[in-house]
Length: 372
Image 1 (cartoon, helix red, strand yellow):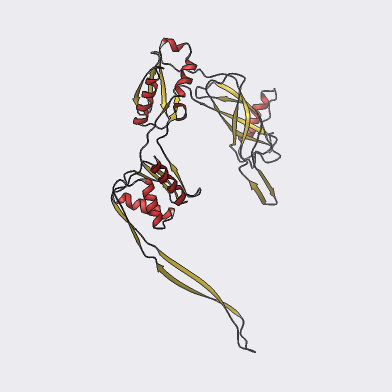
Image 2: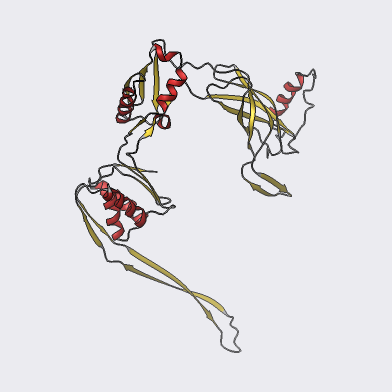
């Protein structure tokens, strides 16, 4: 245990900086609620089409035609008719309104909404959303959104010159929708089974989770595939299903994950799983440094001549190649040993990316290699 801690500390001290890389380690027990969810207890997407008013000239133009029709339909609800061709407003905009309705929310509770411009409005800043029904996939209204928009930015345009900060065509209304109808949630199937879904399906993790639940005597658990655990709920627990789920979610188990190396070449970021193993391989690292120098010279004409003073540039190019260093890695080399050896070569994160790719090409990297 001391040797493992020493290798890990050496890895952090010699190699990683916050902007360069991150290490993901496995092997620590986790709670079920942190890596899985109860089937049936899910969010529901709500959408609606609304009108934002009070935009001070930054709304949709007449060319869209959408806003005029939407406002005409709106005012007809208040008994005003025959306005076709008479609506010319720049202080309003047609918007898309979306929200996420969590499970178990009841009528009277509020949820956040996101408002996005559909037409050619310049900004939604300081606007107010009129009452907008939000429907789910079944076509039923589950919430009504309304309120003042918060854009988190601003935009100013004067005589063709503009200054803008953040996005002003997308806004939020915290607690802007009032829930009108709750979504029925069924946690048990007709046979009395409760299902738990892993966020990241894995056969070993599913098997270990089922064993942990089985040992707790909270129910008969079985992993039916890599991402689903089925639990039979006895009659003694069906009357208090909330307590049963709460106790199951706090159970711990040891997860598992495949050995993987994830690299991003644009930023030099490297994420190495602790399960990575290296086969027997020799690594040689050397580099060529190309140096380009520009020097400016001032050329003066002869006295009393018709010439003028000019500035010329001389360019010199030189190349040097550093001496290559070779390190031999034995079969079964661990992550800490690999990083220690590469740091002995003076390798940077970008060098490590190239080295790891070549080790994988040589068939000596016992892990998945993913480039993002």
